[in-house]
Image (cartoon, rainbow, N blue to C red):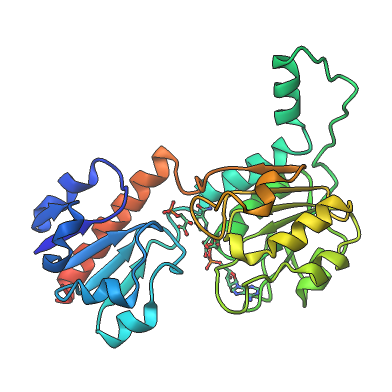
Length: 294
Ligand SMILES: NC(=O)c1ccc[n+]([C@@H]2O[C@H](COP(=O)([O-])OP(=O)(O)OC[C@H]3O[C@@H](n4cnc5c(N)ncnc54)[C@H](O)[C@@H]3O)[C@@H](O)[C@H]2O)c1
Ligand SMILES: O=C(O)[C@H](O)COP(=O)(O)O
């Protein structure tokens, strides 16, 4: 069996996988591979699959499957699997870091100190007593909610398929969730229903000039509508880890906008999480072998 590690995984993974067969990271060997491991970088399109005639399983180390053409894979009998819970803590901690950094002016204070400005008059605001709306109440949002509760925040959420949670007051619509929120954190998969879910209309529903945090997918928000909302003060800050493409094109409007904090898609990229993802990949291959699927 040949396992192709197509994207950047934990450095210990090739050794761990060697008990299953040969392991390579040479993309030129796609045509010989039985299993391919990807993160978000490799785009598993129908054309890409045509170059992988032996592949029985594509394993996505991570959560989002939007870089994999699932329909094509299914039609070719290729299994598609991910590591659904491995990244929850890593991403929740990044969302929370952004949520702490913005009202505490960490980047402005730092830049001020280094340019000789003593910005003591710039007041911080506390998370305590504020309301956070979570869009999507799955694995990552649940970890964000637990941390928000520990900070004394009120947590509300909207999820199209979850009507209850021990960690959030569930709302019946996305509008109801965001209306009175001071913070809105996006935790949705990218699909036809969530593409531009945060659009001009939804931004207009928000009454509290919220900080919006997006560690889900860049296309879940309408970037131009977000720029306009930041410029007219309807939204006070946008903090994001995700873009329509990695990296975003130089003319992505939010790159040049004020009151925006950005990170380079590092939600899953903690040392610990890459280790967890690798361990989960090993368990998946073990199971597929036991079931005779690879
Ligand atoms: N920044 C990063 O590095 C990073 C890392 C991991 C995941 N992500 C992104 O975060 C997303 C969420 O991850 P998760 O682990 O919480 O996934 P999850 O599947 O556990 O939760 C997603 C939730 O969204 C809900 N949902 C789906 N469509 C909806 C809609 N139209 N309206 C309302 N709710 C809807 C689902 O019911 C589900 O409960 C992933 O799909 C991925 O795109 C980003
Ligand atoms: O959906 C995910 O798991 C994340 O967006 C992480 O993507 P990455 O594996 O490319 O860091």
